[in-house]
Structure formats: structure tokens, C-alpha cells
Length: 354
Image (tube, rainbow, N blue to C red):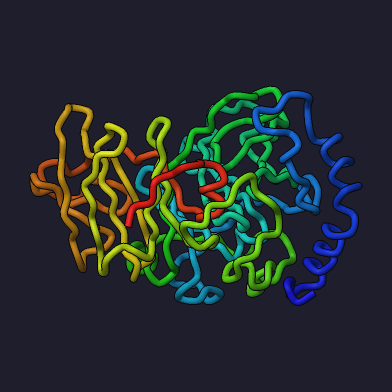
């Protein structure tokens, strides 16, 4: 049982391997309604059951300068609402998967699936009675299925879609996030706040609960299709444009920052990333007034990462920082970072950019 480093996760693995056939049917019967937008036979029981992985709904944040529990190469996910920036570490998300939070008038669920390496935030402001999400305990293509606590409907994280329940067919409203290392985040936003280990739960966040999963070629759950063009756990920025998809492997971005002006499926986009600083983001290049911009990298001015042909400098969240379009925000593409095996399972035939 070397795969899990805690007694809890060892017990969980035993349960998954020995009792999964029985538990799956029992859990599926109790969690699901009759109609699914995904193949019901491919919905798997992850083991812990509904809310067996506890979402955080009363998060506490501390200044970046006070953090001692993270290593420089640990990954964090950042979000910006208005002028406020918050960060969430993988170390905590690995064991909770969802953090519900409100900044100003915007409520959101920061969702993370450790099995597929996907961090996606959903705007939940339009819910009325309960704006929070929980972990259903179910998986599709090894990926998190969350449920909203207002209607108990099930949502596929990587599809950004309600796939079962009262809200079936409703699309989630993603909020742009940035994933990078703790070292880079401190350079980007040294005055920001980050989720504290004071979560209200007794957890050892120094332990990664899935053993060597991140570095091995093995999967815990099957997926509908495997694509061998890249290593399974290669981290890629995947972009969705209509019916077409493409990915940019993060480790192929030239250091210190590479900027690509591209047209993909008739949408003009810019992709900026760095293998050294471990980030990749993308935005639309055409502004609402019809102006088409082109971009070049900017080095040594984080959080600024690029400048356009008119002289405006833009930060990693797509904000115009200085120049003629200061104060304007670029439109993010429909995109997120994922392990290659997971992206390929959801988006068959995707293009790979090298």
C-alpha cells in the first residue's frame, strides 16, 4: 500500500479495490437521477462517497509573506475578482477539491481534480438559496463530478456542464484562473492572500495523498480513450474554440516568456507561457471595438507578461496595466490546464502545438 502515505488513504484504496462493484451501484442509485448527458455506464464511484471529500465553504486567507507550508515548486491556482487576488494551493486542494468563496458580489466555486490536474473556477452568483458546490464522489473520465447544493444536480468539471439532475444541460460560467508555482506566484503578487491550512478539518497538508500518481504513467480509473501522442501526465493548456480544440504543452514554452499570436478556428488568440516560470494563459486578440492586437513578450516586469503593437502592457490576468488601453481587460479564451490523458479523453482528435 505504498501508493498512499496516510492511514486514511490506505483504507480508501482498499475500499476502492475490494468493494467498488457493490459501492458503485449503491452510490450511483443514491446520487443519480434518471437522465444523463454522458454515458451513465462510464460514471464511476471514486470511493469516498458523497461529501466523503469535504469541500471548504468557510475559507480563511493569510498573507503570502506568512506562508511556511509550501515549497517553491508547489503549484497554486490564482483568481482575480475586481482588484482582489486570491491563491489556492494544490496541497490543500488535493484533499478538498472544492473551495467555495465570495469576493464582493461574486460567489464562486474553485474546483480542482487531482486525478486530472484540472483547476477551474465557476461563478455561482446566480444561485439563490445556496451558492456552494460539493464533491459528489463520482467521476467521469477520471474527472471530478461536483454537485450544486441548491438543486443537487451533478456537474462535469472538464465539460463545464451540468450532466445530471434538475439543471441538466446548463453550462457553468467559468472565471479565468492562473496556475503556476508558488515561487512564481510570489513574484507575481507578493502582497496577495492565499488559502490557509486552517480549514476547519484535521488534515496533514504536507502529505500528497496519491503517492507517486503525479509522476507515474498509471491511472486509478479508466477513461473512454487514451491518446499516446504525449505522456499521460504531461501538463497542457487546452483551448476550446467552437467544435475544435488544441493544446500547448507547458514545457515547450521558451524561457523566460514566449508569446504566440495565433488564429484558431477563426478566432484570433494570443497564448503566453513560460516553462521556467510554469504558466500558460490565453486571450482573444480582437477587442470589442474590432481592433485586432498583436503581442510580444515583456521580461522582468511581472505580473506584466506582454505588450501589444499599440504600446499597452498587459498582465497575466489580461489586464491593461499601462499605455493607451490601460484599464481594459482582455477576454480569456475557453481554456484550462490539464493532464494530457484527461484532455484527450474529453476532447478527441485535439491538435497539439509544439
